[in-house]
Picture (cartoon, rainbow, N blue to C red):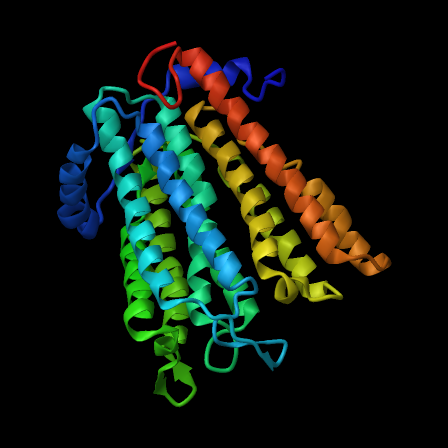
Length: 385
């Protein structure tokens, strides 16, 4: 590609990069890692780890596409705009989704072990893995909403929006934490959430999606438990642990030595992104979030992924993070237009999503190609250039 996304300083930083991470989750240490250590043995040694990473993401996308077909408006067996709408999701779909979800989680857990097994670990592998994860995290969150639907026995679309926001912030904070400390502390909630979602999909297959409409106490249903777990896991567990890790690295002087201003900079693109999308949804004359939630969340997810990938690049190359994402420029004008002119928001959202989707793919392919050329390796093959 003619366009270059990585500067000479960033490429030089990648050459000097050393991976550092800590996974202290009891679930991961005592259950998941032993399982993955055995599971990775079924893969041939000629298979590139990045292929496994990509296949895991493809499985997640496949789940999203299937649910887009059967439940385009995240209704399931609920109601939308006060009217009952039921989309018949075949019962067998949930066992397919459970298998695909479990396979994607397993591939994500085995790709790093495959890299060490084949002696092919590189900065590209980490960048590719975490970049793909940033595109999978919002897909995973949105997919499970089809089980719960909307309505008085479930959650509103705004409650789903805030769940997505919390999920995205949680994922971003892990990499923001690494930007400050230089160490990736793998979240305890990750494996727990993946196994929980697996259980939710299996329950939908064996008991039906109305299982989650079961009343626990008065107007409290099982669906509300999902919402509370999503919020509490971040505010009561993940966020405090991140602050503790940052504090400890400062005290022990093992952090990157950033000033307070520099340490806070990664928050600017994240909160600008989330704020602009939330404002559009809140003031939308056509209630764009309710009218086309999947398209709205897709657009939000793409911009979030691009901002996260750029933070990961800055962290791994030991450079200062970017404080503004160019994908937000059209979004600023869209928010202004909402107050000034009458326009078809759905068409604008669709065009915006298509443009930023192509731009994000171009960025990802460009960065990967530049990394491959610098390291003299191939992305999807163990054969050197």
